[in-house]
Each structure stands twice: as structure tokens, then as C-alpha cells.
Image (cartoon, rainbow, N blue to C red; front, side):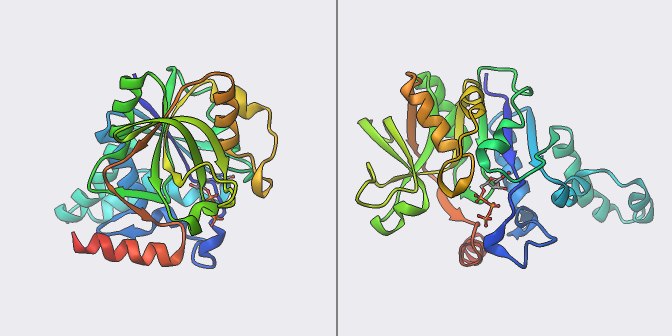
Length: 268
Ligand code: UTP
């Protein structure tokens, strides 16, 4: 059963500075709710029962947001509508646990902080910069995991110009929306890229990934990369499926992307 998820939030958010200096991008609104609540809602609808939010000391504001505040509740207790709005957070609070990453050593290192928390063979990893609307991408990946009995990554075709911004997959076979992956490369040049299929932030990973991450070798940008750990697993015969998801991808990791995403969500 896939019933645990990891959501890494301990990055520095450098592309959105100075806006992210004291207010994490994951807390920014997208439509009527924050980016993070959208992601949490996707996880719960996909059947996830326990969610690990990886934060850092700089991002304690995220923990505070979900903490209940009795003093504040007392102040607004006559305002039923306001209380109701506040109580929405309680449904998430029950499912989340906070894990601290002491130094921002990269996504791979962030995931590795949960190595002793994952109890089943596979888990869901969701990157909050990548919002997917109109379809539950996590659910699609979980379905593909059971069908192919493999690890799964969400993928999307990108232009030649954009392959050097993403982790890219190579593949040996294609069955409708599913690819049999035979290679992972982090941010290749178009000349060395095995395809135009980019990994978008949703993964079903085997617990074996922790062993692969433990080697702690630094990849592109001097960070511990999840793509390199997946490539190591692939070499040791772990099966990976690429799932071309149905929903619409919104990139909230850059200011232009965030503004476009906000406008897109407003249309719905
Ligand atoms: P990014 O590489 O996009 O970094 O991280 P970032 O900090 O979000 O943003 P930029 O690039 O500096 O603008 C991908 C995901 O991994 C998390 C981030 O919070 C984000 O969700 N992450 C990254 C960590 O949790 N820890 C890290 O050490 C690095």
C-alpha cells in the first residue's frame, strides 16, 4: 500500500528572493488556498494517510501555520465563519509530521531525512513547486505503480530549449501514456539528452532509494540529486515507469511561473 508521502520544503527558494526571505513560497496563495494546501489535498485524495513535511529552522512558519492556537481561537469564538475557516487546517494537522533538514544539501538529502520513517516498500514524493491541476497526478502514479509493479515518475514532454532545466528520462518502450525508463539524466544539454520527457515533481519510490542516497555523492549544482540516486537504482535492476500525466502542469518555482499559475487558477 502507498500510504505515506514526503513533501520537501527546506530549500532556500533563491529564485524568488527577496519575496521568499521570510515567507516561504509554499505558503503563497494559489486561488483561494495556499500552494501547500493544494498539494496536501492532492495527497489525501490519493489515499495518503501520513505526510512528512521536511522543513528547516528558517521555515518554522510552516509548522506554526498548522499548529492549533487556542488563544486566537478564543478571540474569534463568536465568529462561526472565521472559526470554520480556521478549522480546515485541522484535517491536515492530523496527517502531517514535521522533519527537520539541518543544512540545505539538496533534494536527495532532504528525502534522506525520512529514511527511518518509511514503513512500507514504496512511498509518494511530491515537490510543491510543481502544481498539477484538473486531475490528481499522485493518484495516477499510484495506479501505474500497481499496474507495472514498479517505481513511477510523472513526466511531461518539454521543448528542446527546456531540457537543460529538468531531470530527463530515456526509455526503451512506450505503452500509451506509460514509458519503460532505461535512463535518468539531470539537466542534460539537448545534444546529450536521451529524450524530451522531463520529470515533473511526483514520484513513487522504493525504500531502496535511501541506500542509494546514503552514498552522498554530490551531483549537478553540488547538491545531492534524487535523479542520480534513481539512476543508481535503475542500474541495479529496479523497474521505473514514466507516467505522462493527464492534468495541467503549473510551475510555481519562478516568479513568472507563479504569476502565470495564479492567473490560470483564477480562470477555473
Ligand atoms: P529546488 O531545487 O527547486 O530549490 O528544490 P528551492 O529551494 O525550492 O528553490 P530555488 O531553486 O533555490 O529557487 C526542489 C524541492 O526540494 C526542496 C525544496 O524546498 C523544493 O520543494 N529542497 C531542496 C529541500 O527540501 N532541501 C534542499 O536542501 C533542497
